[in-house]
Length: 417
Ligand SMILES: *[C@@H]1O[C@H](CO)[C@@H](O)[C@H](O)[C@H]1NC(C)=O
Ligand SMILES: *[C@@H]1O[C@H](CO)[C@@H](O)[C@H](O)[C@H]1NC(C)=O
Ligand SMILES: *[C@@H]1O[C@H](CO)[C@@H](O)[C@H](O)[C@H]1NC(C)=O
Ligand SMILES: *[C@@H]1O[C@H](CO)[C@@H](O)[C@H](O)[C@H]1NC(C)=O
Ligand SMILES: *[C@@H]1O[C@H](CO)[C@@H](O)[C@H](O)[C@H]1NC(C)=O
Image 1 (tube, rainbow, N blue to C red):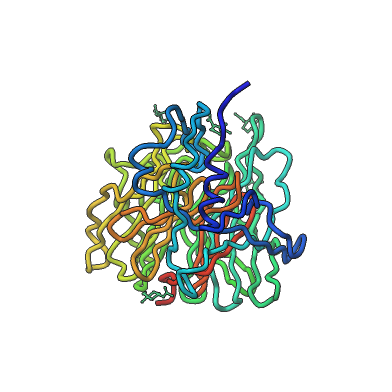
Image 2 (tube, rainbow, N blue to C red; image 1 turned 90 degrees about the horizontal axis):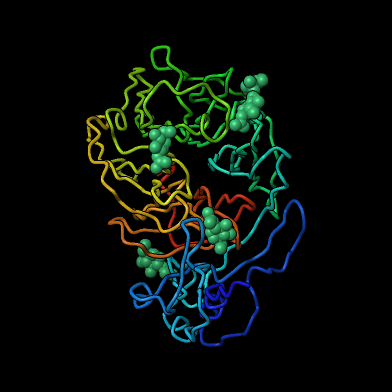
């Protein structure tokens, strides 16, 4: 029998409750206010920091953590008496608190996804975007298929209606249907999806009306070449789109033709139709670029990279920072490592109005200041992965594999500013 203990888990709860240390009340066993649609429950305290001393020397003689595990699930491989020490160094971080720094923040679960199709290995919920027209959030559902299957082309789009109390979430059916939509951005009344495509429908960018849900393909080729699998997109105020393209459809979905183009970041000036690759070709850093985000001033572009797989130690797990010049972004320079994350890989990435960078990783949303210093992690339910997120005022909505969450913070996103 293994002696490994997930001592972390209990430590975090204990310390997060502060001096009171109410024994074993597990925040991941929340009170469900309501089942099914409108499901709302709290798990908390949810914003955690690793104490400085603990970062230097882990308080156990023998421990191990793999790259798809959250830090509080680090396996302690001996039964050493390290609890007290760890308890004193793991801190509940009052990150971006609203209503004062005293009360520990709690994340709310607002929706639990039903199981995916039987052929799916797991679910991924990505591409969260807010539309003020409908006062709603759209997100995509994707499911890497089990061996022997290819991805199903259904639209798999969910909508969170913020007009209702409690909030309601339902599957919606854009028409014509999209083919594996993924990342998404809002621009002047329209929703723009990065669509991965499949064997018969090339991927690209699809515009969707947030009220009628009617769709229109607005980009699907580079001089007759199919894109590999467009993953995420942002659009500047001046209508220049940046989108990532990787091998996901080919490698993970078994659903696209063999890639003919380099993985990388494309810049598409939607006013002039000028389409160029700005990073990745010629041996750039990317093996499966994923999330993309703009800073408020639109002078910085953040791009995440997964690598071949998220649980490969040599995988990407990196957020790169690019500089966009003030002449329409060109030339795009930089591409330095902004942050290397400690778990999973940063899938979705978002920037807040104060320049902090948020990445969805195993266990939660990892947050960095604008200089790349790690501030802490907004923790989601045990076993879940934060995939992408979207601000609506000072609420951060988080799309996980299993749930949609939200947490109120003292900041907001850059959309519409
Ligand atoms: C990583 O560790 C977790 C928790 O111990 C385990 O469930 C998972 O299977 C491990 N993953 C790999 C790739 O070993
Ligand atoms: C919220 O953030 C602002 C800076 O953006 C700060 O001045 C203010 O004190 C913060 N409020 C709370 C309650 O932390
Ligand atoms: C890929 O999908 C096809 C069906 O389109 C299926 O026959 C094949 O077994 C799948 N391959 C793998 C490796 O899952
Ligand atoms: C590709 O997706 C379209 C719908 O978007 C679907 O009609 C078609 O059957 C899919 N092709 C394959 C090979 O699955
Ligand atoms: C990643 O995938 C590429 C292309 O399939 C392959 O050439 C490379 O060896 C892989 N790298 C690792 C670390 O698995």
